[in-house]
Image (cartoon, rainbow, N blue to C red; front, side):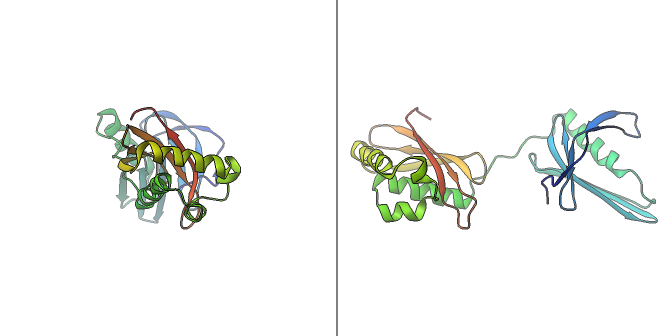
Length: 203
């Protein structure tokens, strides 16, 4: 619902306070999605009946939203909610919340690191998306895992640094050093690994 399904032609819009801004975005499934020059993507929608009006507007990247209600027929409350968010941003009151590690990402990272420490073809087939052995052949992936296990023995995940619910980096401690494993999940239910890369640079 919060993704643009039909794009708008970019247009200049003037608010009641006289400010002019460029509106870029489109319409999702019942919600409008427009881009704010400072805050990024905003999701919003207005509604009302004779004698009432409302607007809701939120900024997904910052985890904050504003709702305005009025007992006036069809007021321009979108200007009001935008002004509130502009004021908060202007005073430095909005900061992105820390990104939490999605349980599915953490679980798949654990399974991937366990596979790298002790390779098994059946577990690899269950864990990997269909593209994995097309992108890089099974024998090469297996050989890299065997070398890793021979060098490090047991592997322990120190933490997972998420980029989104489906992508992140596992910081892994081995016997010789700490390294990274970047991974990306496939859009399946349940998700599987569609990409991973072992990076030897220290975290």
